[in-house]
Length: 400
Image 1: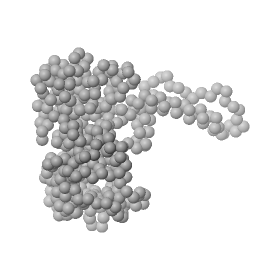
Image 2: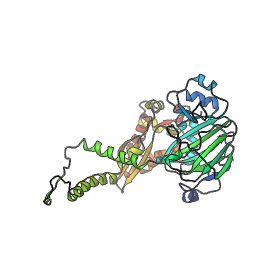
Image 3: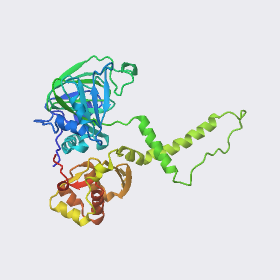
Image 4: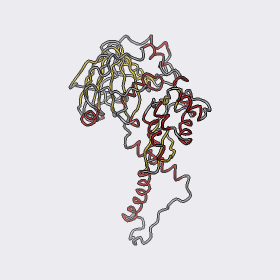
């Protein structure tokens, strides 16, 4: 069920990761042969009217404003009032709502799962664009329908180079260094910071497979939140101590000696949390997706025996796209398993099973049956199913 081929053409995965990833752009012609767009413009407009779907319309010219961004959900009547050219519709997280986009994402699993952001889809009529801009994340731009010209520049830009007071970071001035016309199946990889401008040459749909890169503020905030959440549940807090402090001439001064002790105390607390690493696993697997989307896949109160029997009958298990799973090993003793912002601990003998469910949206039926050889492993998988993180394919229409 899972497609293990990669869409990088004749370039090997190792060469791509060593020479292109986060370093320089790469154009891949016919990255996916005979590619057929999984969605139509009308279907995109319909999704943009749904309250649970994050959507935007970008207008290049709107009165006195050079660019305008409108956020959905939209009223259906809006689409008949849009101009014939120079606008774009963007839908976020299409891999959550449309199974074919989730399956497309499987072809990019040579990048670790925790780096995956989402699959965004954009439609634009002739001249439609979101303007020349930069992103802080890696992206693969797959042409799905029609033609789009991509122009790029590796020039470094300052904050003053962007239009102020816009919802979008659009460059005031942009001079292309290279440009290409992409047809269905062609793909362009762009590392962070490369300015790019995509212009529709006719009615076109482009799929953006984006990879998140948390910044230092986000990581620091997540770490501090973890420290604070842990400390509020403890009665054995460490307090500042300063035995043998040197006599000060100025009691109003915070001495360098005291500051060193304060900084060491804080650094020790943060360092212990950093080494623990649970904070990062919980942070990186947090999800904003609605619980309704998760629960829509839920199978109620299946027993371990029922789960195992369905596998033996050849029914494919599928991971919910709203579920973010990851793990790491603490030496040879324990597995830290993360699921949508929570952590649980398991013995190392569950490693084969945890690998299967974290690595694969469609874990091999034969491999699952092989590792489900005791009660503890069967219980682990059955709990994931009953919580809606996995479902049997026949129970939900996963072929739309």
